Image (tube, rainbow, N blue to C red; front, side, top):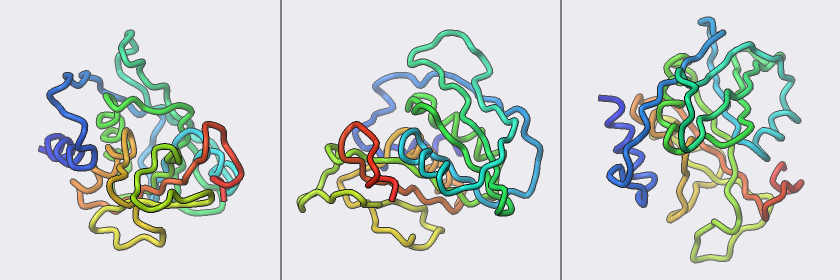
Length: 205
């Protein structure tokens, strides 16, 4: 089934994560306020530089969508709050999702599945960050501004450098690209390099 395929792909993207370590929480998400429409592009922006970049470059019009768990009972890790949804007012068929906080890896697959199922057929772009301290490379670490990424096999090569091994995408970005790969859908994950804990101008360029 699709879920098993996604978890298998996640094992390849995140080889250090084992499904045997902990049982995944059984959490389902609902997407309310959504009305079927001809959206062709879905842009998912992680918290921090990605969301700040989207707010700067897009003319955004709010949407009354809400993506949240069906059960609001206490859980650990804490259940994610709904992101904010927008459409780009000067471009047809583009939905932008802004996350205020990361989605815990335990909920990432279910979160991604619900959103991607609703917007099935849309090309997906995930914007997020990678800290310079996390960057793994035998060569000198790059400096801001620097962008690198991964993409699904049907997307064709993106116009950004590939994220070099052994660097990996994690959490929600990994769940989204794995789900898209399982569906043979176009998806690109673009990671901006962030030098330090605080947002700087370099990672927004």
